[in-house]
Image (cartoon, rainbow, N blue to C red; front, side, top):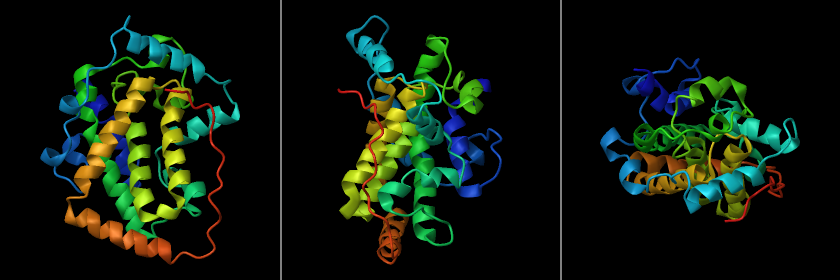
Amino acid sequence: MVKQKASVALAGALLLLLQGSAFAQPDMSALPPGYLARDQLPDSLALLPPPPEPGSAAFARDEEVSRETTVPPESERWKQAASDADLHPPHIFQAFSCALGFTPDAKATPALYRLLGRMAIDVGLSTYKAKNHYQRTRPFVAHEGRTCFPPDEAMLRKDGSYPSGHSALGWGWALVLTEIDPQRDDAILQRGRDFGVSRMVCNAHWASDVDAGRQIAAATVARLHADPAFTADLAAARTEIAAIANRHDASCPVSAPVPAD
């Protein structure tokens, strides 16, 4: 039972995106619907290779990137990573505010708000099969350190690190938002990338976890495009954004450090 609860921890947090209620570690049956049925979700266990083995060259890269993304606690980049770790609404909807030029809102942009919330369930759940199977230890546990977001640490100790659900969410949203607002695609994609880098800065994920999260996000977004309800909301969100006046420019700062591949 503990393992099952840990495996849906991210999805449980994403439940807040739709309900706005306190997180109570729901089981799968308690989650609201995304766009896809459970059997329509990409199979992360089938699509992803196993995470790097300790002692391998790939794991050495994970350790190197972990060192490269280390920043002083309470630095501005650390604070940004902590902000990106917090999935509670309405806070999470501010993640792409600079890139978009506005903050998605349930009243002002209901179609976009619904789109981001529902697809978050699909993207989050698409990671759990591999998470459950591998139950990879997170870097802050392996290094006996801390994360940038203490409220999540007890849960993260029980939740598999591979693939990164937060990174999947950030990249999935970025991919869809570039379709809705292609004039701001570079700023949106930079923000989606940095959202994943925040997981390494936070000491919550390895680089290979983040890479795998982006792969599963792309697979989920591709599958979502075959769903009529998703494509209808996508079209409605484009209309909403086109009607927003006085949006600020998208000259957002890039959140360093961004390790080289």
